[in-house]
Image 1 (cartoon, helix red, strand yellow):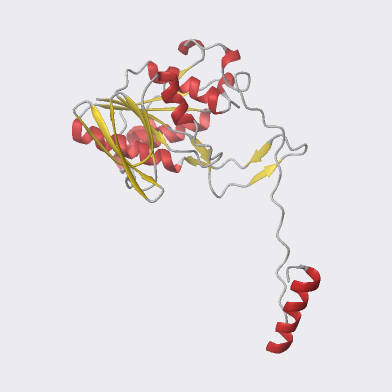
Image 2 (image 1 turned 135 degrees about the horizontal axis):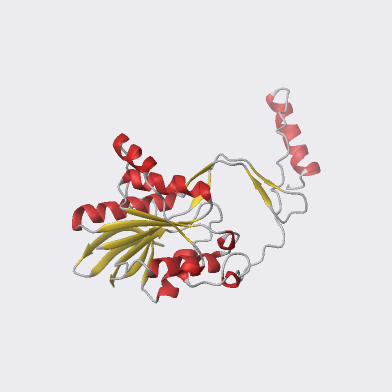
Length: 260
């Protein structure tokens, strides 16, 4: 079985993010991590390979730093990796990104495509379904349990008020949700091997894509402006006896906040 995992490197949850002057761009501290939901997808692919045999290939779109994600995946047990690295690929919206990834997947002859349900940086959850649409494959999203067998996938996902079980024929695109598994920690030997590995790269021309179709040029979505979150007012402690504190609290609610 040939399994392809689409993974994304995102800013570390603790990285400092600021809106640049003008509000059209972000300044992001150079601290990155593998997208949490994509870690579940990588782990599930490895478990399927261990059970059914086959090959796991990890594909990511990004700059040179994205090799860190790919080396981690190799250390975990992935067989192959592919980096889509070109300035023309960057700054694309979900549509442009999904188009690019779908072209890369099409070169792999995948029986199963896995990715996270969403990226924790933009939280749109759109790339996986769009990849399925570009490839003309069935898609099941936010999967919490997955069984593969006899050319089909049986997926369980949470829905309002319960669980839903969906069965699709392969090849298919599955997006992973929290609870699907617990990602493994790479072993030392795997890390050492991954550090020596050559990371294959591909360009738009290799995928038959024109620069006008991808990245910022091929995007359907345009971000006009970013806004910073309003800062909360400083906490104010009310002093005095309990009766005085209660009276002052009522005064603030009535005269200042005007909620009573």
